[in-house]
Image 1: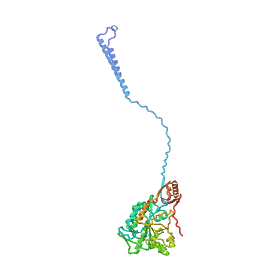
Image 2: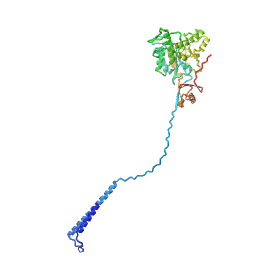
Image 3: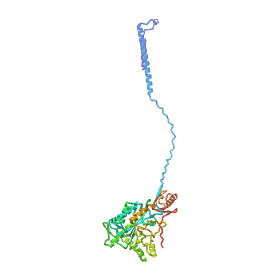
Image 4: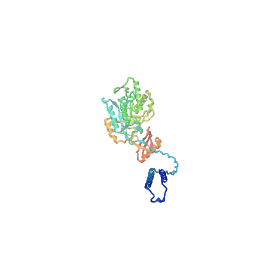
Length: 456
């Protein structure tokens, strides 16, 4: 725009010079005419206008450049960062897993434990008249079991009590149930489906144990094999003898086999349930031996002679009475069964007047040839319930820590029990740790071993 204005100005000047008359000095002051003055004035006005326009245009251009420049973003200078030194890669450390401490739970049976050994005989349906004090209604038996269970008792086998390797859950107390005058069908009768009849005492016990697993299932039956027939038929709630003697004997053999395999231990109550104080010495030995022989024969008839080695050797005195002679007493104490095993225990029977609990094999007053049993009755059950709070219960003890692969190491476990005793965290007793048993007594811990039975 400036260039165009300069060019226009030059052209105008040239025109004016061309049309202007020659300059004359004489006319410097007065030589101008009105026309000349008017023309000059016009020229001056044009020059002034041109200059003003130039200035305005220039100012506008300068202003525009300044505004444009003010709105141009300032270019941020790019800084060149100094590269950091590259770190040397370090090997990643593998974290060591935190080892979880491993402990074992032991059930501890007190050494001074005592147990009631209950004695039952016959069982009859509810509503039937009792012909003797030894008869128990089935509903009464179940009521007894409930009361004993609620008092903190759990069943252990008679054999385990005598061997000293019995065990109940911590907080529970041992109880033993025995039945005399075995084998009546109302005591035990096995249905075709392999379960005991609910109209038999063992059937009621079986059902109760199914409903209360922590009560357990176990019983000992002392049999008289020569004074009764076995009822091999059940009609309703009653049992009857069959007409076929062989079939009856086979049924009895099958029942004995079921008992052995399911926790009902058969023992000796003598062949015909004699009154020993008036039995001659020579007949006492026959009574014991013949009862054992017939028991084994019934198993053989049922094709289960494989169970004979599992038969124990304990005696329950008929009527709870000893022979009247020293020789008769010694015959029983020194009796050995057909497998040559010595008698492990001899039991008496107490009625209502005498109430005696049976000490464990670890007690200094334990006498395996003079063990009490309590004839079951309302009076006796009530007395046992009253004694329950005073009886020591099984305890628990946590052993460890140890490596998990040491859980079955008897040396390691024996040491852990010693540590628990020395620290005072656990007490003396019989420790059951899985399948292992240890006896902790008088500061020593030794592996369990069955008690020795002295023989003459």
